[in-house]
Length: 258
Image (cartoon, rainbow, N blue to C red):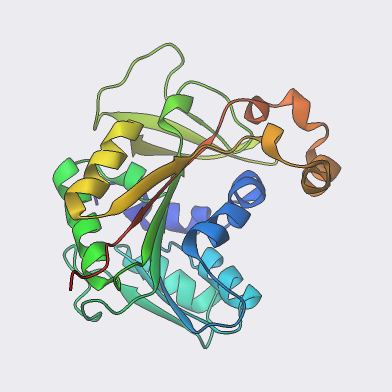
């Protein structure tokens, strides 16, 4: 994965980045898309786990959940083990685009959060989806969350991606400025993949029932907006009110034919 997130200094900065908007908009949707239930034993793959913050939150919310969290960056795995260890989380390093420590048809679900936008080639993307497909059980979902490709050039609370007014080709690099409490935190490089390519890659890997969600602040109930507005003010004033900052894509590994 040729991207800035493999660098040690970026890994250190990334662990301090708050996830206010994506947590508010996307966490409940992720839980539903992954089909996590309160009591049923469940083994989840967190592909591209970064510093382990999300995996740790999931295990904190669901005592029955077991997570294998993997990342290509050895520094990310080191940070995750040091800062977000948990008895139900196993952190491992991805080995040449493969997960040799996981058998075929062994996991109940998989997620990849802000991973595909960090990949510069479709061939690499295909390898990722094929390997995830291999380790999932039949009928298991794979859920991807990324910055929305149609949001390039727009200023969101957590980030601004791309150059305003510039068009991008599939696979083209673009700058991303990340923000913390409204202040610039760091700049990284991501890659442009339109929504249609997500659907194509899922289908090529063998997934079915491929659907997407594009949440906005406008879709939240008044009750759901309370924690956001307590910190940031009125939701109506932000780009996220009507423009989706994130894209969620979900596919299911088909059942084995009799």
